[in-house]
Amino acid sequence: MLEDFYPAAEKILTDIVHIIQKDPKLKTVEIIPRTTNANKSPVHHEEHSLGLESWCIQPVYCHAYQCVMNLRQNKQKSRDLNRLNTLLVGVLMINPDITTFWNMRKDLINCGKLDPHFELHFAALVLSRKPKSSDVYTHRKWVLSKILRGYNDKIELLANEMNVCEVAADRYSNNYHAWTHRLWCLNQGIALQSKRLHFFLQELSWSQSWILRHV
Image (cartoon, one colour):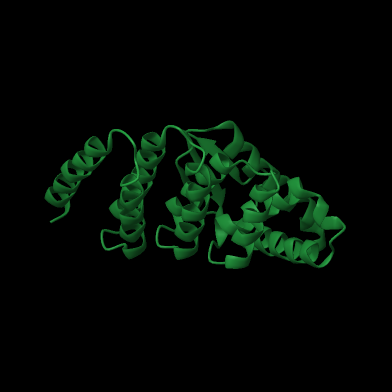
């Protein structure tokens, strides 16, 4: 049965990556309850949201996971870095708590095969499903640190990261990992050459507003 599903899994994974690449405003990933295959694509894209029908989650995950493990063991095949990226997207979107696979994505960034800004977008989508995943925040710190070293508009980058933290905290107000990540972002703001005062005043105003909404 799984062998028959492999071609479909590859198509589903390719569709997912294509949607992420073509829609920079994509905000969320949702699982759509659907227990049977209606002979239509289980991948949905509407109003900047990506939906996956629930029936395909397990077979797609198992397929992608096994393929990634096979590629890790076969160094020759692992040179197909585009396919490796696609497989890792599928696995980590479903289950982001695999540190080894995030490290493989770091390798793709380091060798120039994966855009760090795309990676931030992808990781934010993962957080829309799993806002408490510590592995995702750890990975985001690494990617952000890499970008910040050579990025001029650090304010814009950090402000976007604050928005990611806000969305995660709105989902779970006691989200330790989101708040810790926000504190890390504030610490990066200390090194800003300009607009540092504005950056921290904005954070103070936002904090007061958030407390009023949630306390």
